[in-house]
Image 1 (cartoon, helix red, strand yellow):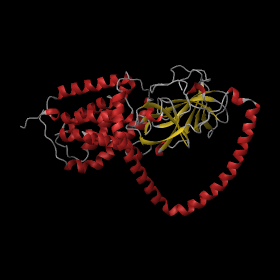
Image 2 (cartoon, chains in turn blue, orange):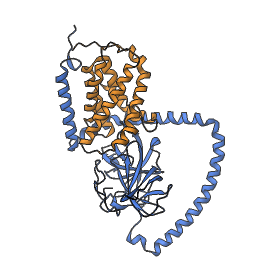
Image 3 (cartoon, chains in turn yellow, green):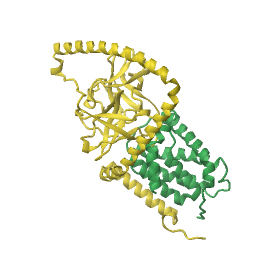
Image 4 (cartoon, chains in turn purple, blue):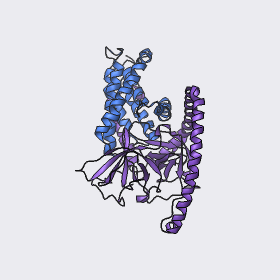
Length: 302
Length: 156
């Protein structure tokens, strides 16, 4: 029988003990925040490969999609032209509404008491270079880091709405905790009924907006926006749309299932809002409180 | 081992695009299970440790959690190595099914210990069961290739 040497042979129990202890040590070191530099170095080395592969995959995916849609392109162009015309009219109407809104704000001296959040000029466009390695975490890696002025807690959005927030920053990359992750919580408000609640990610399904006060009916299709409460996200960013409501008279609060406006399956580019200072940096492991809280959201862990 | 790093990058960048109903196969897990069938537990635990580290670093998860879960998986699925029916069509698939279940349970238990919170009923119906089936299906497709690879004998 051939003698086995090195890691490929040897005593299984001994090898297993050493590796398991090493893994536990790494786990403890990371949980106590002592592995940041090593993680940063590794991602520094792997991020160019991730970027390249990500671009290649996106290009391939887009080419395949275009090829698949080729037959319907003409019809789609016509449809899109009609939609564009409608949007131009809608845009004009919205501009008028915006002007009216501005006048009302001035009348109420709204800007003095509660300055509206200015998104323009504070965004950096980042490319998503990696997504979840496992089915249990909803995290995206972007190609911007501390060298680009990214800090933990900064909100991340795209043209569709709220994506998440930065929770780990390395020199050239950052990790974004998506709003679909179970450990993510966002203070929100329903656009029409003005009810507040907390959107909590759920594993394998759409996020749930909980802590909605009873008494007012929540309509399916209502738009969910960030409420700005808690100070971790700017107010008014679209989060999703209510697709189902769970209401029981015996419960203190009602719940709504929220379909995110962001298509997380096709996340390519995101914007980091750099001119918004989060109230406090919230670690990854924040969770909803065990006891129900008042719906004001002031004490919530957004 | 660099191959496991490349596979981990592939897992992070490309595999999520193969999602069906939000669930996608776990490449590193399948590689470790395949290694345990071909080369036995002794090799597969090292693969599990290394592959797990790559996964955790790239995914932002708790570093070490995947390693521990993958090593446990390798120990369980390594039972299939040198078995009389190793080359049976369904053995790798059953190994993938049971291996994914073991991996999920251990991984989630570790995440739970370090502070992550999940809804267990949703996890089982929406993720664990579909991933088990998805991984088993991928392994079934890969079985002909697996059976052509050289097998390492091991007499413990």
